[in-house]
Length: 98
Image (cartoon, rainbow, N blue to C red; front, side, top):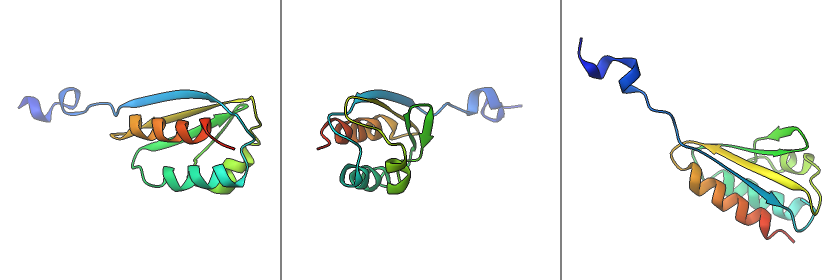
């Protein structure tokens, strides 16, 4: 048997990244829309977490449904080949929300 068919050597874990962001403002429609548009451009699986709730940020209503308020911490997680860029981009949007 060749080593390339060995599952232990042929699979690699997708990169994972995570970043926590303290919101400067409530997570309302405008930043939720910005997050959804940005998240849709990445191929990685992305999640937003707040108050023990986790959502896919590609949906504006899901993001707004988190109910995150100014001063609270939201965690951005992503897994995939562009995970680092996805987390950095979404964290920047959250950090500059007005």
